[in-house]
Each structure stands twice: as C-alpha cells, then as structure tokens.
Image (cartoon, rainbow, N blue to C red; front, side):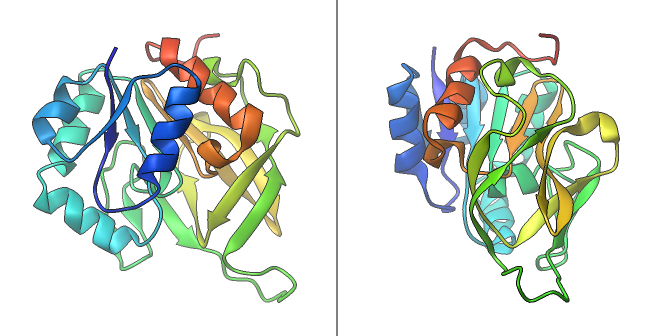
Length: 208
C-alpha cells in the first residue's frame, strides 16, 4: 500500500513520514499530481499560511487532484492546515479552498486576553459521534494543537469531535472517505499514532 504525503511547502512532512513509519505505513512525500492521484491513500498535512498553501496547491496542479481523489473515494487524512483547506473558504487571506466539506475557517478573536492566539499545547477532545479512526481514542483524550484559525463546518453531521478553548470549536471533521484533525496527530503521542494506525486499514466511511 502506497500512502502519498502531499508536499505543498506547508512543512512538517518528515514528522508525518516518521509517524507513518512507526505504525507500518509506507508514507512517501510527493509534489507530483500523478503520484498523489495514483496513491492508495493520501495524507494532507500542513502548518503555516492558508494563502501560500492554496496558491502552491494551484501552482503544482495539486488542487484539482485532491478534489478528484476525494470524489473517486481515496481515503484522505487531513492534519492541521490540511483540515482547514478542505472547507469552502478561509478568513485567512479571504481565500477559497477545496470545498470538500461545506463550511468556513475563522480566526480566534478573544476579548478575554487570558486565551492566547495561537492556541498552542495539549487539549482535550469531546467526541460528538463515533468513527472508525477513533477506535482507540476515548472522550477526554488530549492531543497537541498549534493554530490561530478553526474550522466551522456547516453541517453538524461532519463534526466528529470538538475542543473547548474559550469557545467550543470543531477539532475533528469527516465526510465519507475524508477524515481531518485540527490537532497534530503526529505530535500527539500514542493516541495520535493510534489514529494513523486505524487509517492504515480504513477504506472510507464512518461505520464502526
């Protein structure tokens, strides 16, 4: 099984690749649209700016390829920035995104300055609905976050888990063969690796 880790200059690729190796996944880093489309599974990671990330996806011919891969049913795992770009639009740079899931990405804006932006560190998730990739994850487990923006899916059916950081935001979203986490599962220890391990055998869908 070949797992494409999409290279669109959004960083953190080696960490994701090492995490794949730890659970026995053959993850290879690629910027080739042909290789991404031919892969058995796709990991769409990322840190940094949505503006430059979306522009690079277009420049490398990866934007339309990710949409095509999703619609043909390839299991797709989004991580951090990769979880935001799957929505329709982001406030960051007022940018249109992939539109695989209905919704928008908004910036944290707190009057209470005790809540710092970006949101950095370990935080709990609250599971809203079961999912095959969460078989080894329990309600209240902690994962590692680094982000200034958060996802707001239009449909509650796409919200798999939420996290509280002054507001209750969506920290895991999913639709059909797409599963995406706002947290860095590759930096989240045993629980994060358990999601990758389940992804290895996941064929898409939300039935446990």
